[in-house]
Length: 280
Image 1 (cartoon, rainbow, N blue to C red):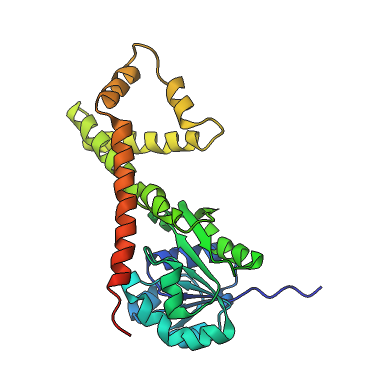
Image 2 (image 1 turned 120 degrees about the vertical axis):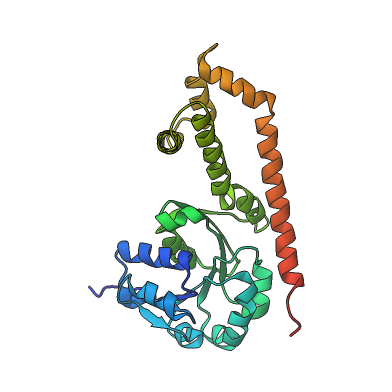
């Protein structure tokens, strides 16, 4: 039986996120000859070359001509300049486009690329260590096969989930996109609190990071976080005393307001990006 040909995946942009995805694909067993990367930076291409014998170029058109799926991994401000020269080729070949650029709607991307099948993705920074959360939205012309291909790329960097409403990506940005920073900030606060209680910095850091890691592992099980919190909280005990301080400071309300502010800012940033487009 003839083995099915693996689709060729082209990455336009060779930054950290693209490098993480390429590394994940190679570790998952994808052939290096099915991965292409284009970047104008010699240094970026050199870093990519360290991963394996993938195809490297500084020419986006040459890369796009050989790819079945294109991952757009450039900064949002550079996207128009990248896509418009490719539009005739994209209209002819109709590869699947997967954008990991924050804040750019599918409508904006299609103004520059044309009406091609498009998946918009919101990853987060833990993808750099293979523990990311990526949320995907696909236009109506993305086939089931296309969805599988896009998911296979992002799944190498962590968990993947789809939404059917593009507007929900603003909430996604506020929860999982910005979310790592919230946890980092809480860890910072815990480490500093431990030091104020007499722990040396290294010990406090290890206690906090391992506790966060273990709590996250437990929360990924079948028991929801609220129940886990109740199970570890004894009436009149130390945990209950600390949680009472959080409640007095309206921690739940504070988190709700912070996430809402991030979602509102995501909407505003997308509007700013589109309004800042140069005249054609």
